[in-house]
Amino acid sequence: MSIIPKTMRAVLTTGHGGFEVLEFRNDVKVPEPKPDQVLIKVLGAGINNTDINTRTAWYSKYKSNAGGSWSGAPLKFPRIQGADVCGVIVSTGSKVNKSRIEERVIARTMQTDPKNPQNPNMITLGSELNGAFAQYVTIRSSETFSVNCKWSDAELGS
Image 1 (cartoon, one colour):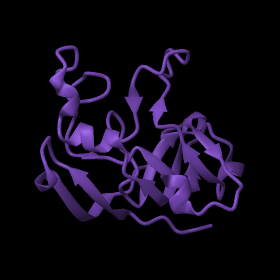
Image 2 (cartoon, helix red, strand yellow; image 1 turned 120 degrees about the vertical axis):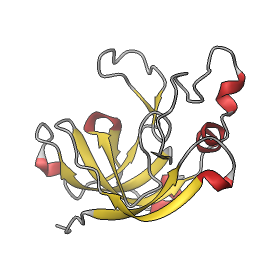
Image 3 (tube, rainbow, N blue to C red; image 1 turned 45 degrees about the vertical axis):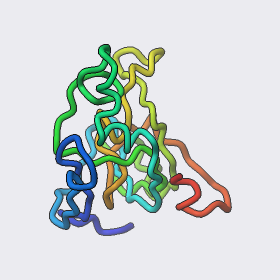
């Protein structure tokens, strides 16, 4: 079992814009999993069009979406983007089976709404939720999927 640090490196998006709104930090607090979440040590992350479109406020061009996110709600900054992830579970919330620790996983980019699981509701990793452009990310356990293949972490993360 690995030791989980208190802080991590991450790229924060501080607002809508170009590259000037990206800030590399090495003092970001490692998130703690909520009861239904897992803490993933990120081993691979891909840059997705969602990451670019969210940062540049491309989604805001549509009147139905004034908030700049997939859902249309205003984003809260700073935000850790990164919609695509591969990693290993290093900790679990109280409602998640501890046997998942050390499991290699990928996560669903478009997350389901826990109050309405039949509707994806545009809750998106790296947009409405902090994502994988960091050393660690928390994701609901139900949105992570075990992988056992020869693909590299970078291949799976993209």
